Image (cartoon, rainbow, N blue to C red; front, side):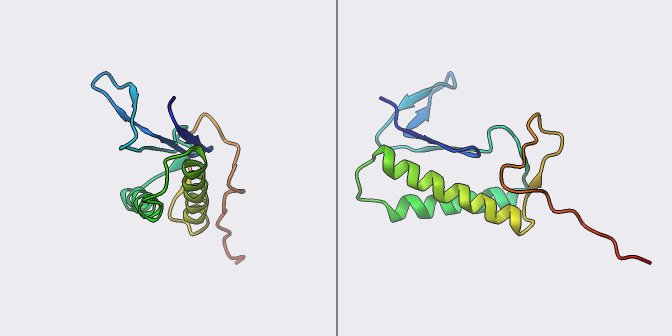
Length: 115
């Protein structure tokens, strides 16, 4: 059975991708899919920060059994991390996305000073 954790913006699978692009269950490899619905605008630095945070969370849980609970905990922590990136302005909502539900809060709108 394929172990996985799926939140709105983070999908983690205990699997690797084969040559045909299919997921193959694995007890040794975790595959991370960030923002599968393209709800956000990402830059390379922000993506690398999420990958680094993922690596930190996986390392912190090394030695523990690979379970649904442990994957969900990592996924939930990453979801919160993505929210923090949005709140800091390091990523923004993709207003051209097919889904505009602002699941992480309303977009920040810059206000101009009254003249």
